[in-house]
Amino acid sequence: MTIVEGLISLSKALKYKKRVEERISELSSEIADGNSILKESERESDISALLTERDNVVKHLVDLKVAIMAANQPIQRNILVLAELKGKIAVLKKMSTVHGPGERSWQDTNRDEYVAVLRKADVQKMVKEMEVRIDDIQDELDAFNATTKIKVANFGCIHRTLWPATGGRKNGRT
Image (tube, rainbow, N blue to C red; front, top):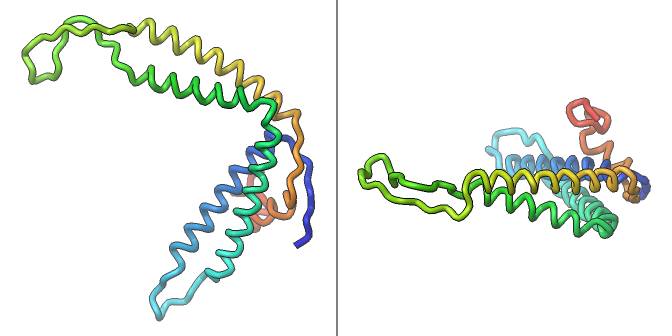
């Protein structure tokens, strides 16, 4: 196999990574579904060839991820902060903010008194503040991803073979 290096933006590499992951998933399904068939049935796929192709695409994905990780080093902190902010928002949105008298269930006639440390308005304010911070960080990441270039070995070759029937475009789209 001839190694062809392509210089692409990090944002394009991230989109491409998703396509490579989709292709691995497709190959995995085809391998799993086509391995064992009825004896009198005609085998539609060469399982050994599919396994080899999957191994090659996985190796390519690992190389791609390594290149992306290396390129992300200057903004790694922002990536981690972004993930943690999103996690905190998920926790806050699940949190009960019930405060005051209430019933445990519709069957329970006893009225209990609930005390919330954070009330609904407090949680909404916190979430909005974090969403603003998330948007700011995401803008920084988007700008970085658009301007940072990485070398991807076999980008052109692999890209065209992911969906050969459409000339390298999934569902006929780029």
